[in-house]
Image 1 (cartoon, rainbow, N blue to C red):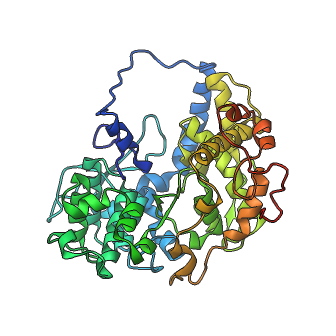
Image 2: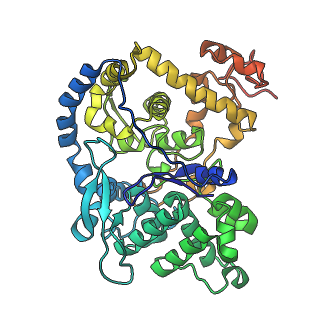
Length: 467
């Protein structure tokens, strides 16, 4: 399940995760076309113009690295600290010299491209002109794509990764989930779990770019038995194969991991298991700040020196707090990359810009509580669908298989944080929001619709589970 909703054009963007494209397909919805004829109006036009005038140039300057090398400019650093996926998350380091943003800039980059009015310009327009992977001038791979189609498949060939990226764009596939499917197939093939009947002449060898391309084509077209198997998503495919294959699926709640390894940061581990949509690196902003060792305050929390492997209060609080902020950014359709150039000016400016655009007078407390309300609302929907503590877990590879590389031998002790996280949230032992918490957030109306609050609201979150 990797169908994405693609924005039109070779420099378009994708709503890539969670198979939202499949939802459109299930409704026989092929496309949505929008033509605008009216200029957007703001609560305070002059204030918006002043904010743009004040911040456009500083943001442009502070994000020069994004513009020059894109999101994959940090590949070498991320691989060095053990945060990058390698060989279906089995080992901690590999040769990535040819799949960095620097390599892309030197070999195939034509120009950066920008989302509308954005000063950052982290998009890549690339052109492979020679060799078997030569193609049109088009959008280039992001960091996640480099990780999932590159290092996680042991492929260190930039042009091959770009071809895989282009095929995913043409087929409308999420490159994260598609890359997960390829690396899963490669490990299952190595273990002898894919029969000749299932493969129908195909192979899935580690480091083989031709095999990677063939698997993406089979997946995108749902072609043959292998394509049909992988189109179900890695978790379902692993269950269909059974046995050891189920331990090769690296997912939370059925959503395949993005290209950040929680063994490099216990905060990332907690973020993944508590995310409302499964393994999601953007429901909180942890890997970018906890792995290097420190996090700025962003205007809503104190600057903190981080210990990425320790189940500390600092790691707990950054996940909890950032989940509220990111829920707001999603709802406001704001780019989360502005948090990098704004740093400690982030929260003051978000509140100011929100007022200038909408006229809303929100305090920081209002902003954070609204984010908390959003997060709990989504959790209650999950609870209604049967999600509880049993689902807030890492897959076996993250808890049993030790890595080489930058985060060697570190296993994230997410269990040490989970009880404290639930208590901080006002959820019970099973991860279900209490009636008191729902009332505090103005969500008591959910109970009238048949949603159930904590299994026993009289019982404290930090006590033993009821027998």
